[in-house]
Length: 215
Image (cartoon, rainbow, N blue to C red; front, side, top):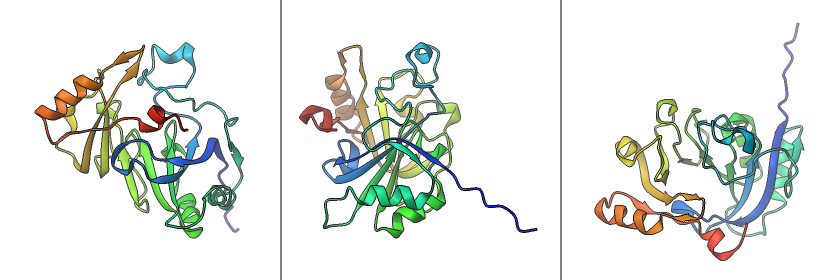
């Protein structure tokens, strides 16, 4: 009997073209593929207080965002993504969430590359990243669940309770960024800047897309 090959349906909250607003790739044109779902918070406000990550500022619930939907095959999603690229240069896609590695697999990465994309992921690091990725950005939220301890970029929201800079600065990453926590109207930017001045291994990352008012 020939074994059945189960095809994965990819649930995407939104799919859009913009500039990368954070970290080492700030300012670079990119298609963003925001997957639905996360393993550290349901995304529902009623669950926030008891979530392992309770300061997330992103809506990743459902598939009703711009360009979102359920894609029955990897090729279908890759085709929709590359159609958003403006033309010219090396197409770049950032897979984010929620937690993208709940869905982003080698099959989808291959489909993205087949249409020309360089493929990046922004992950909380609780799931091992596929080797085929071109750029791995880890933003740790729960230290005892961190399994992805190497990559291109470590971007730590600061301050937070569960992970401190000294917990992760020994890990194998090319770039280390601190990003000010945006919560309850508090502005931690100057405090983060002072920390980076005193600890120059770390660089300040700002959410420039929010500052200039783009998605």
